[in-house]
Amino acid sequence: MTNNKPPLIALVGPTAVGKTAASLAIAKTFDCEIISGDSMQVYKGMDIGTAKLPLAEREGVPHHLIDIKDPAEPFSAANFQAACGEAIRDIQGRGRIPFIVGGTGLYVESVCYGFGFQPSGSDPAFRASMQAVADTDGAEALHAKLSAVDPATAARLHPNDVRRVIRALEIQRTTGRPASEQLGEARGDRKESPYNLVLLGLHMERAKLYARIDQRVDDMLAHGLEEEVRGLLAEGLSSSSVAMQALGYKEMAAYLEGRIAYEDAVTMLKRDTRRFAKRQLSWFRHMQDLVWIDADGAAKISDLYPMIYAIIAGKLK
Image (cartoon, rainbow, N blue to C red):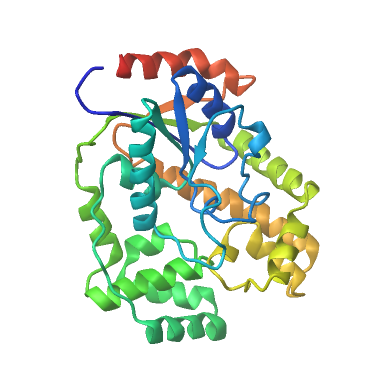
């Protein structure tokens, strides 16, 4: 190794860029176990909409932090950081390399650089009042409230992400400081990783990525996304729950509850997923030490393996 720190590999990139296919080859080559860095794959029963890799397709590579929570339970970046740290120690104890793969930038970065999350308290009555604003005046009106007190966080969050907008407003209310300021302190100008870190990012030309996103949505629908959401609602999961705000779930829930037409739900899902990919890329561009891998010229993701292998081997050996 190039230093005495324990090795950690991480692979990020926007949704549908090809992280899963690349991760299996990397894991087998470098004797890794994969840790999901996706904020929604932690939930049981949410398989199709989160693009969860079926057990039979994991090619013998152990995967962690998948199916560890019921959809009604909350799961935060701080929760992920703690659970991921435990998984990393377990993997290291087996003499293998931990490998985080996912598109939730805050989750991945918090582990790679050991962010210190500050307790911010909670105000259930305030949350309820803000939810009432969203229900009565619309998500845009709620988002405008956040823009007034924390424009940086408002710029990062989509107006329809009501849960996170409310949480950012709650943090501002309970601490007197904007969430973006606290996150900036956690990130720091330059933070040193506690790991011998190899941080990779996959990207491709926007039109090509958007075509892949549209195809992924079509594939999810063909494989039963509507039925998956219908089953979750039938089990009593509220369409306003945290898990149901995930891409694919909130749109299908709106359709199944008769609030929008099926065609509109599909159009919204494709549009919102493209917007989500843009926000992911915006976050990743601010991650230090990230080495970008351009997938544009590759006919398939496997064409990138020699380049990826050289980067990882050069860092770890």
